[in-house]
Length: 429
Image (tube, rainbow, N blue to C red; front, side):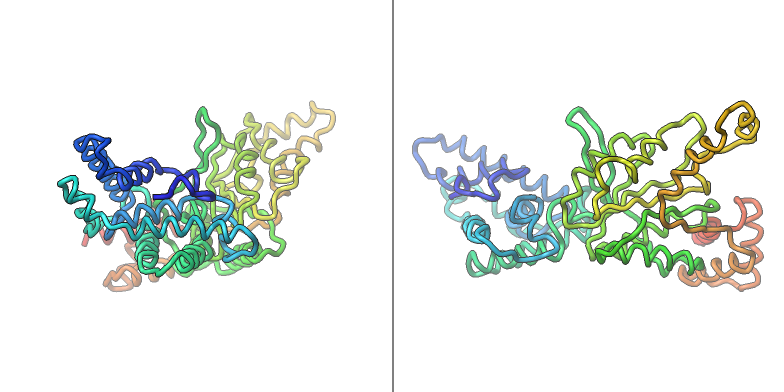
């Protein structure tokens, strides 16, 4: 097999299994190598494929799933050019076709003679594999199903040209690598530097499920829609009372616009020093990225807000057009102020400068959206809607009476309190 001739797909993660399998394809019937060693290597390869595929929840022909996984994960000159845009022009298409013809040979390889020669049937066991029904610990069900479907489509292609067309269409529809396959990410920092890691399990909340706050949601939708369509958009701050749906609204925005190329990276306050590295990794990709900061606030002694100000707006390098910052906070001005600040103004020569420094961070968010606690009637409507969606059959008068009793001892009226009350009722059934 010609994997040493690959050009674009020359270096891939998890490719050691592929190298060992192609070595076996070329040498399994050679008298030069010990048959027991070849058999042992084949079992190792099958074990590697099985472990990877079970971790990702794949099923069916696991050899095809493994090869498809390599194609879907590899970020290279061709795949990153095709993501979102689709088929491109230029000489790179000829090179890509050359590589895809090699992959087509690997897809069509018949393991029958290898198994007969080595006296094993371990490959046959993974060519029609039935999974346990779970989606694995690496991919969610949506991504797992897409890769398994692509594997079946590639197996059915007639030649390298059709193979290339199918992969390219996949890149256009779903993207490539971690940014193409996943919605949300977090930051990890180790000795090798800053890594952006996928979050595989996120809440699938939809905007329509959030009762009330129609004006606030519209402002958020309008700003995000302008962003994903390439128009001018602003950094956005959602502030207000706890439990009113600020974080849920941002998660819902991601779910609504994911298929239009929106991605989200969650960043915590102690990671602000890594923001420049993060932006450097995403600024040239064909996706729109929201850097999400939940529950953002600073105490008087914390100075990270100064660094954030420079990253948002104020540094020499202009923030990329495909990056926005969305934050939620219970504080309107983000930085805690106290009466002591006013007392110390008498001792400071330029008191207004200190005040402006603290307020200037909020000024860098072009859109600010207020989420206040609902009034009693609004709270009761949220309870009604949630009860209806969850199939709770209870007399309305009793439902609202119990909800009012619940909120008195559980933090007051808010969407979060209403949801906790409904969860309590569901747990009692």
